[in-house]
Length: 131
Image (cartoon, rainbow, N blue to C red; front, side):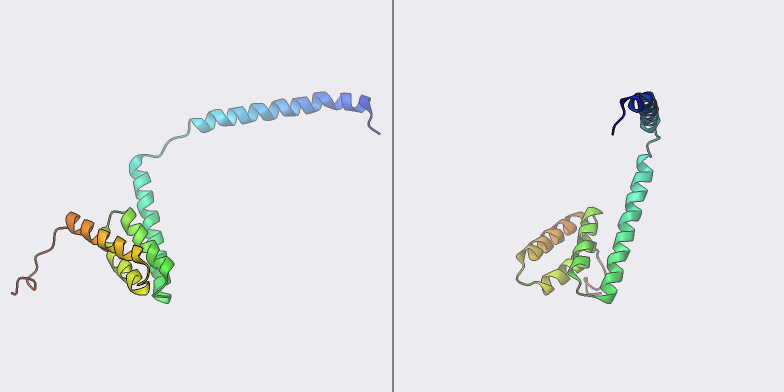
């Protein structure tokens, strides 16, 4: 069934193919490790584009389904990630209204409002001054 003579003929061929494959993979590893790293500013721009794209996606969902909790939570997470806390407040308020028995949303809303007021001083407008 299995002929040793035929097997001996194929050993050099299989060894050669294996040797070539190993050489190619090691060369590919050498060239792959010297790839150019993107600069931090392009990485930052790419991250901002990704966040903007995700935000648009959530906003499209909310146009069709204004009470979609996944999209609302997504907007909150993106705003917090981008350190834009004032943008996190409206969707958080809506989540609190939709889930009055879920105290974590209220706690997060309180915390976000407190931090947003520390980072963003109140704007003095004419209405608040009675003018």
